[in-house]
Amino acid sequence: MSPSMPPDAPRLLIVEDEPEVRRFLRTSLTAQGYQVIEATTGQDGLTLAGQHQPAAILLDLGLPDMDGMAVLAQLRQWSSVPVIVVSARGQERQKVDALDAGADDYLTKPFGLGELLARLRAALRRRPSEEGAASSGEEGIRRFGRLTLDVATHRVLVDNAPVHLTPIEFRILAVLARHAGRVVTQKQLLTEVWGPSGLDRGDSLRVFMAHLRRKLEADPAAPRLFHTEAGVGYRLIDDEG
Image (cartoon, rainbow, N blue to C red; front, side, top):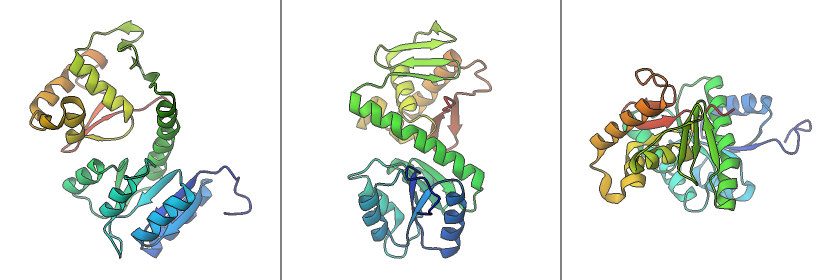
């Protein structure tokens, strides 16, 4: 840690074997006030994650000793730390697989520093709220622009006016709100809303998402809350701060 770095600066773990990429990330993130720890192999990354309990992890998939997907799978057995995959693998199927395996977000190389910092801020905002909800057993009241969601009482307001949702619509909204700011894959939504037998309900999900936009968006034809990530899933935009 730099001598001028505050002791409470968020600690990030970079798991990346390319020296140029590590150097770019280390220099850029340190300049933004983050502490940076580096690992060049998947096994070292897992070890350092356990030793240092980072606030977030930037994970490359093409590592020399093991595939990054295997690192993610092992990590998710014991940690819920936010993981942003940073990879040259840009195919849609690979993104879906990583998100389904527990990644919080996915950036394809090359990427801009501004986008990376925005994704990091979103991941770090989510972490305290999720930990607080887990420790209290409550999810509390969430606000997303004009939309207010109270999971405990099953109340939904738009501009402070109550909106009636069907049980399925509410469950979809609750899942998206729990992962606000992050892509929720279609497979994850189907499983969490309908259970393991619901994977063939993709057409139903699209219909229910259209209902949610009609009920909750100011202009359903130009949605600002519910974004479709083509071929992947849906994202509830987190504009709480």
